[in-house]
Image (cartoon, rainbow, N blue to C red):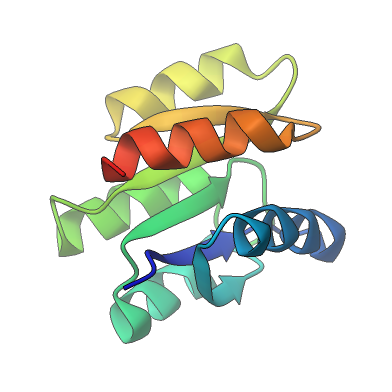
Length: 121
């Protein structure tokens, strides 16, 4: 069975890039969300194996959403996505329970490496 992944990013272009990388590597994208609040709702509905979560988003940022998702499921696997220069936020994310992080612009091999390592595949 393919690993089911939820993609969270406020930029449709970034979601499309990640979806493309994942699909080409045998992962199943079960849903997408464009902000943290949507991410929490989609997580409850879809129960994905892993979430890729942008840090900087409108409405609710990725770190706040990560904390809420961890309250719902302490074992939730979340990989944060950040632009260069957001190191302090990355540290906050790891402390809040993120398993790994990938830096934009995405490099396909780094995305797959982080997801495979986190899922243990």
